[in-house]
Length: 212
Picture 1 (cartoon, rainbow, N blue to C red):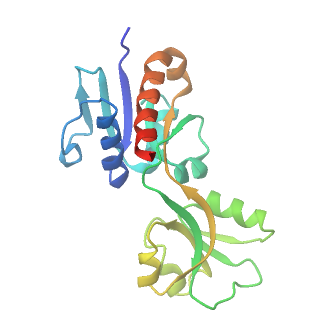
Picture 2: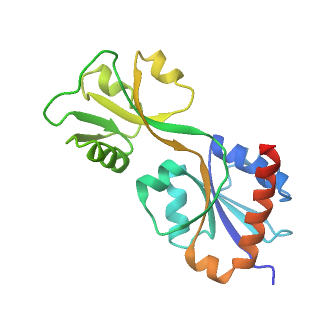
């Protein structure tokens, strides 16, 4: 039986790269899908539907079974620690999490302040370094925090490093590499394992071919 699959995909750069992977794997998707205002795109000929979601919300949809499959950055998976299966590293949208701040500055000796939208990752990292810190949670423009004296350091995603450089910041430590991963709801995997495994195999072939 060709079970229906619901796939949660993040808007933005990851979506564009993931859609190209899926097309190369044999999934007949529409061109310029992201330009539509529809949140759910139907592909009845292939028995799939795609949910357009914010990157941080994809894991929530998959964990609660609203989507069978999702595409999420490793940063989101590390930060949220949800009950999902991570089945494939898609190798797309490579970047990394790093500690950054103003050049030639020392962190405060008593509970230095770290601004980030990744409080769990930052807390875990500095705990492993034996440092006690104070987390300041922000949702955007993280680079602003050290410029106005709000924080000693930031923990944020680095892709090219251009944003840090343009704001006069430097990278101090690299925390972890990040790529996008294919994730699966555990119940969906039990009920639709054949269909999900088929998708994983198709995408894996494309990834291997691209690596050659």
